[in-house]
Length: 578
Image (tube, one colour):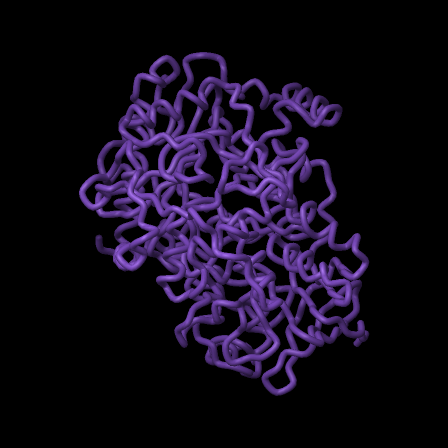
């Protein structure tokens, strides 16, 4: 075994969270930090170009290539589960949709036991990390992650927003500012026409400081302990087994799928599962790998009666023109992810804040780019944000090269079926509004004849897809069942901390990359024994009639002075009642 020496901190995983932690710790020139990443460099045109997002997602160099176990409530279907492999992790292959989530997401985190994670404490970290063009009073303008709105040059973007307002929902000037609920423009983490991955924004500047070393192609076997203190990381790289000592801490930032796997191979996890695979139990932690959540989504697709969609760009020549313009100028259709408007609504009366999200796209195509409609069309990606279904990540065997067994138990809770039927029916209502009447042709999917609960359920079983937002498998909290404390320290262990989306007690109401970066920013401060001042003016806005109305144009009631009442309502929703 090759001895790689010792560092103050050893970070496992150069994904979104790991890149942030490496950067913030390296601000102290007296620290030496090692980052271990199983994949390789993220530098490639298909990663850098925003419009090419579906290509790295389907490329073995950048993706672990996982599928779920057969999902029993989706007729045994295995669901594609892309996970980033390489510098930047999933931030190098995702859709670049920049959604902070609803402020009440973080109030719910605290109500679920993650003390200190309320909105007024998290907001300053979003502000620290953001570099928003023309940002408002609650935005950051000089942070490392550049955030932009798309040009919204296609009239369908505005028509979709207007249709949502005509259907009785609120208008949001920007879902990342004061009001999350409603319909409005979307933002993306793109700067100067380039994907702003965590590697670009955080890791490479950290490496330039000289006190951060990165080893790629490093497949971690396990964390080694002296007693109950994590002291070493054992890994394989370039065909040799290696070890490295962490003088202060090991930071596990391998993501919601791989972090629990590494914990289990290290002897921290459910004792029965570890013994089954011949792993010595260091600490019996039954919830490691449990509580797995995700966002599911489906496509409601419409034929477009006017030839204004992105359909012509999908030909070989169309793609070549976009690529040549982008390579020459970093401008044009190659410089956007094309998700330039969207919305957040509630599935029923009695829900405090949105649990359904829309991404609008002026093209009828699957997220991974594999299935394209035969002509002009448009679609929404629509799905629920707080499913009560829970799954797991478990060992296949004790070998570090073996992929895990992942089962989300999608649609295992009865509420999921009601909420997804509502997704389809509300979308049809929005598409039927006057603002979209000049454009809407036939319904391509599910199809206008699919109206009964049984027909919609059959469609859902065949077509539901992951939005690629797994979280929750190393839940943080104050209770003894939580895997970590609210500062990420693994319970029952010293010198080992988890920092990534696996900590989330509940998935947020939107895409997960921005919340993961903010989580890592705050955790980096907690590691150093400090905290940014609590934000002032951190409103918690809701429809004043949420208890009796499913939709409203006025999202005007501020709960920031009555957080105890809000917490009770949020916990009630989480437990399945209004």
